Amino acid sequence: MAGLFNRRDAFRRSGVGLGAIALGDLLGGNTFAAGDSSLPSAASSAAGFAGNVATHFPATAKRVIHLFMNGGPSQVDTFDHKPALEKFHGKTAGIDDIRTERPTGDVMRSPFSFQQYGERGLPVSELFQKTAAHVDDLCVIHSMHADVPNHEPSLLLMNTGEARVIRPAMGSWVTYGLGSANENLPSFVAMSPGGYPIKESQNWQNGFLPGKYQGTYVDPRNQSVDRLIENIRSRSVGPSDQREQLDLLMQWNRSHASARGEDPQLESRIDSFELAYRMQSEASEAFDISRESKQTREMYGDTEFARGALIARRLVERDVRFVQLYTGAGQPWDSHDDIHLGHREVAGRVDQAIAALLSDLKRTGLLDDTLVIWGGEFGRTPVVEMPKEGANAGKMNGRDHNHYGFTMWMAGGGVAAGTTVGATDELGFKAVENRVHVHDLHATILHLLGYDHKRLTYPYAGRDFRLTDVHGRVVDEIIG
Figure: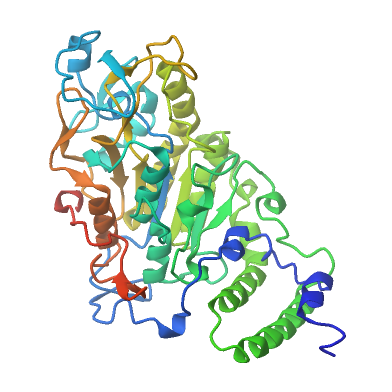
């Protein structure tokens, strides 16, 4: 029979479409490592539990939603109010130490007004006036800094802890440590409306971790479940026939694997087909926001990002461990010119949805153990970018990349709500107080999830690797 009907024929002829083939990132990654059978326990000396999973110490967060503002939102136009920009607008005073990727000019005031919110009167730009209603739930980090002022390495650093070479994404490390809490859905989902961000699927890669820890990409631009997840349903056979076909396929795959020893790529594909079969029932329901009330959908808004935010809430309430939602394809926040237009347009797509997500998580009690992270790969300069040929030719109204100081915030999952951490200088260019590097952020996130970032490791290429490499400290001020 094998000579007449082999494995390749089985894939082509059978109805085992299963939706697995649609999980492009889950199946398509070629950077697999050794199988799970050789893994040391990630928490052999654990003292706590996240769900049913042992952790190094008791966790305050069980899952993560990462709202990635790709492109680099300006800290001084969003959450880091600097009155000195108004004072020095159009002047060179105080900018001697400002060195950026491209030539810059004078200080430029923010085109957006700020208002104080919450019990502590935290200032927030008009761009995020809906999100600002939740400042008492936020821990705002004003002293973030990264390594270089370029999108590609900075996105990789924020996502994987490494700017140059392939490494596992933060979501992969989280799911490696915590495991799956819902076997019928992917543990790590990445959404970007309208297409990939810069560096594409490298942002949610599994690197040297086994393939099942790679993120599954979904485009929330698509409204129907069948378009969100292609081939989620077989059009040729029913579930029972699919189960028989899958069982037969598994027998062949196991026989194929046993003849070749441990094959991590094959093991990952076997896992993905099983997951995709189970997904057919639960994914159709989880990704279908039409099941939400009209009032809820209107609360989030009618943008592609809003659909992604609502899906994110539906996924975490079904115990998906790590959900990442990008602003959109490319780098939407990259306002080298016309920042008064660009930032307003992008913020208009996300502000209502972010506020609704926080309200929804709080209403359901999920915010208590769901960590929400907001921010980009870096910030922007407090001075104007000089005009050049190309995007901002002849204009003096945009800001360049700035990795020396920028803002991120976190909410839920045990963070110190209603607080600020660190500070930038008078103009908002450089982090000067309680500086928080991306490695420190990652160490703190893992701490909230119950893991010592120095002990959550994976053996590869002769040494134990970790998300923070050889860096990072837990920022105690972030922890509530």
